[in-house]
Amino acid sequence: MQAPSTIASMAPDDPAAARLVRLSRAMEWVTTGGIVLIVGLLGAAFVFQNWTRNLLLTKLGDVGNRLPLDAGNQALAAIIIAVPVAVLVWGLLNVRALFGDFARGRVFTAATATHLQRFGIAVAAQGALGPLTATVLALVLSLGNPPGQRLLVLTFSSNDYISVIVGGVLIAVATVMREATRIADENASFV
Image (cartoon, rainbow, N blue to C red; front, side):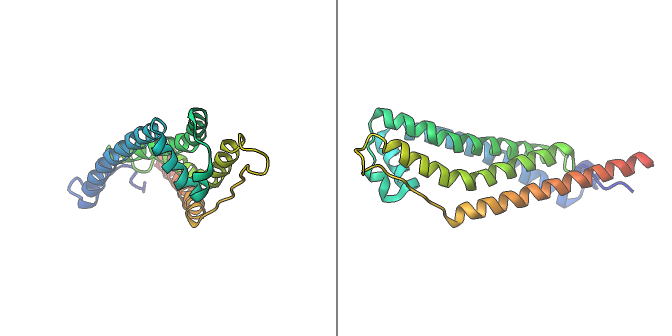
């Protein structure tokens, strides 16, 4: 017997299927809004110098106050921060596509497994990119300081660790999902 691969294969009046469709449609909108806000607010953060300073304080703590912030350094900070943000947006686009597939009844497919795996990779990458970004920001923005006043910042938080673990879990679940889909398709071919 083939495992259900789509919501449509469930009973049409199944409340669980209807809840999944509603949740998935809502989450498509939430992720779309999140992507727009992240990109928009980050862009604004590098237009307004006070916002850039606040972003540096968030990433670097008090060290962010000691970094020179002229137009050139503001542009460098934008380029450095753009890397983890691009990875984040890529992950959110994949999770948005995952919810879109769920909303259209495509639950256990190779495509949904791929979207989940890519989102897991983006989440895990955030754990590594957080500390790396802080280090690069402090180094690059303090290069103009006189010798002895250049800064090296090493950060690592429990959030970075949790991102790596959660990303790994998502990647593992996607791998299991892909294998289950393959086995279900293989069993269906025997019937």
